[in-house]
Amino acid sequence: MRDTTEDLHREVEELRSENEYLKDELEELRCEMLEIRDLFQEEEVYQIQQLRLQLEQANKTCRILQYRLRKAERRSIRVAQTGQVDGELVRSLEHDIKVAKSVSLRLYNELEAVQKRNLQLEWENEALREKTQELEVAKQVLQAEAEKAKEVTPTAYLN
Image (cartoon, rainbow, N blue to C red; front, side, top):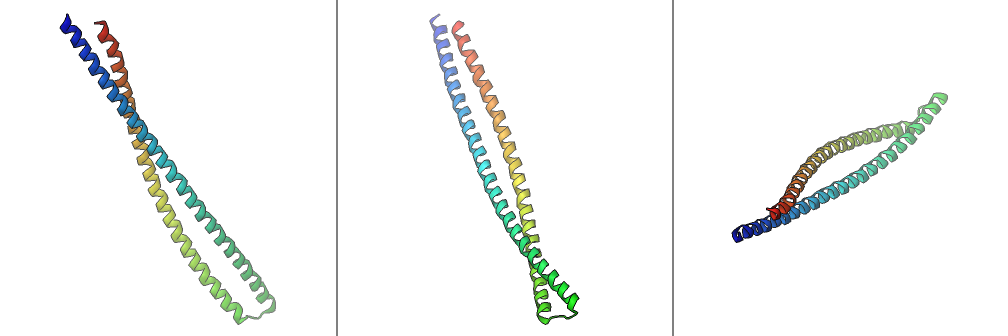
């Protein structure tokens, strides 16, 4: 009888120890999930800020180009009305064309870079989602094991 009681006490202690271990594992997983979520949110906020800055810059560039286009249209109307081609006007228009081409190329390159970065972030986002799901499953498994350990502990006292 004494051996049985000692065996039961030993088993209860083992189960308590395992239960504590599972609780610690569960807490570690929870902390890891929170860290991943925080990192993901920080990265998202940073990327959104960067995209906003790029959008603001693109809007400024568009306003400049619109101004230059209106200016060129006014010059074109003036030339059409007077029938004279002004040398300064031609040089100015050539310069505007060069600037417009340069800006267009730069904007295209920036757009490509932003699209690549966006694609990379989507891949990273998906990887983080998968990791979060894996951690959630592991957390649920550990919780289930902890619950089993809790259920087994009272039963051991009854025997």
